[in-house]
Image (cartoon, rainbow, N blue to C red; front, side):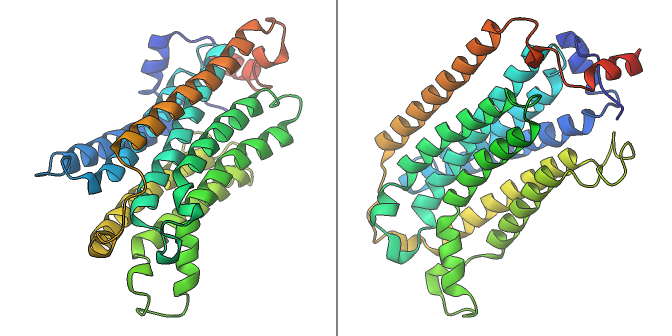
Length: 320
């Protein structure tokens, strides 16, 4: 209801606004600060003795790269989205692309360290990472397309965007859901299939993240009261970052507890396959984002998509 920035801000104005109290300020900082936390974790792990030289650790490093990228891309999107309607859409195209890469990044350590014993070298294990790569294209395409429906069909736009990120999450976590089902009610008798406490915290944070994104609580119960602090998108950011933190801890737990057992198994994807998959997915996502960006620039300036949301005119008046 309030706290909006001018919809034609300069880049410098956008940066300076992160030090002023607007309805985006907390959104910016709740992902800017975690970027440095995950970067610190990446450098600390990668700088360990022999860590990078050991192929067993490479899937973890692949996971940490997009874990650093997605909060930074989100921070940039929230910072520069008020430059113009086109800039806003492009910012969030890039944000969605980073989240898609993160969904792929999750698949690498899950395939390497978290697969149930009965799935090893089976069809799902063999095609787990390639399927996650295809999912990332679907995620980017659907989420970017959903922005073109925001004004005409806001309900459908919300459904498509929610589905774009829910489906890759459900797919990536299939190994955990299966292990959870195997161990339900069995206590400590699961052996290498047992999930760590961090897995539980990660799944809980992910569930809470999705709920906040879809429900718009608490601001829908008291419009205007949470404009600056406490609205659902800020809580969504915090839960997402906490989920990634616990996911990292869970991956480290699986790496340690299952290493001796996994040492007897053959790796499914070597260094060449990992680099090739990452390069292909990055290139594919860049092309998808470029296609939507070209469509955006070809749209006439009278297109409703480029006129801003219904609150933007009022927000400019309030700022003035």
